[in-house]
Image (tube, rainbow, N blue to C red; front, side):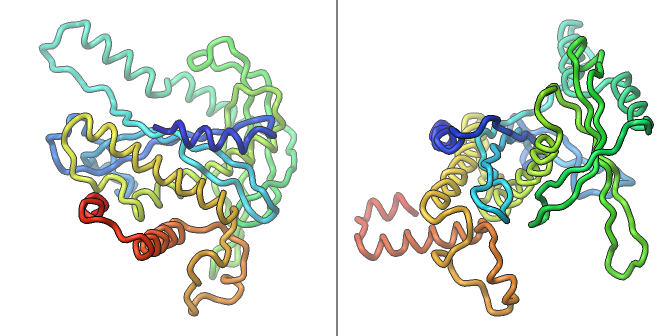
Length: 315
């Protein structure tokens, strides 16, 4: 289903030496119990002090990082994979031992072990590593980043005897509005099997991963991912990836036709937006792409009248 998207992205990435792809899981809330893939999952909007559960579809989303074509812009995220990833179902108490063994093995592949968590916690408390500096692009500009690096570590329960590398990204100080003191976030711990790529490049790919969160918001808010009322197993499996693939093709078509930035080919921003905001170099939003698509469809419909059957098919 994503063959056309991958082929179009491959022609753009021929000159790059490395390709970065981010994966993340997202949930599509559902209230019906007739969908076989629906399972209980934690509500991401629930409070931290209480775990609320909702019914929904757990999906796995893959995003390809297109490198920026000009200064002042970050990487562009294009969806290259989207599929349902339901958790393993817990068998009944009267189920045979084979089903329980398969269930336990499936649970192990989806969660970290306590031994791996203890090892990461011990590495977090290690303060003898030298602090390194680099510059990465995030938040619409280039900012300094501090990090530590440890090579040649082992994760017995995760990667067994394969050597890995740990990168600790130190928190960036910030001053909230109305507060005089500087505050800090929690540091980020990145474990990778790539021992040759420079650490600043890996950190930049990690920062560009935020694009997949923006894709989740656009797909659920503007495209309507998860709103279709379908119940059959084939429809649930095919409809959601088709919507994601269609939006990915729309983003690639806009980049190929108008470029990676927001130009005068899109609708004008409202006057209540500041002049600095209207003249800034930014990417087109999902609202811009869908508005331009509706305008092109309306213009094409007025130029070439559709027959009655074609109008019914479009509706």
